[in-house]
Image 1: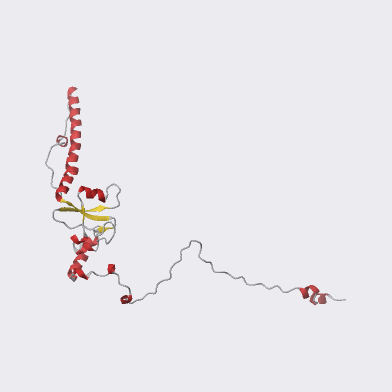
Image 2: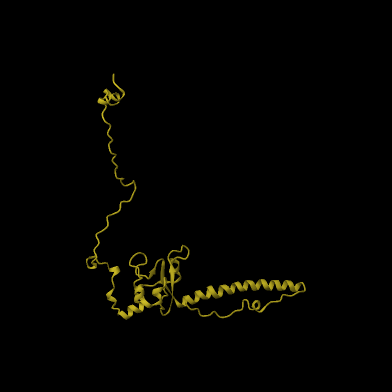
Length: 214
């Protein structure tokens, strides 16, 4: 007779034939690049010695201009150097301005038909030569972002300004004057009258066009 302690310790057929269960470690694969993902190029080897870097004329001083240190300091201190859109220098006989290249209605082509001419970088001082475009439709012209420098003969500028800021407002005054006179005649026929102030009396008075400045 096998006592209770022997039954617990005695080997059985099942324990002899059963193989021990061993757990296999799971292997995790590194995630590969996702479909459509952009593969980044390895970082280039940096060299702290600037003499070993390839030269780039865009980022070097143009020594051909032969500017003195004082002239370069004057360019640095110029108000134009602190402005996003600097004032263009005066060109004798011309009105200078900035034109936009991004407008669908007021295009550069329409301005050229009006008599405007694009300003070349070589026409201006050294502080504007760096703004010259090297290629594209406006190669050689002075350009900042979408704005491009242009000039207009002063005789055309005066005529355009007189038409837009003198003749056109005067025509509108004459239209108002006609309506006022009609209202005054109507009131007079009815035994009344229209009292006008000095400003109304001065409407549509012909005066010479002023000289416009840029």
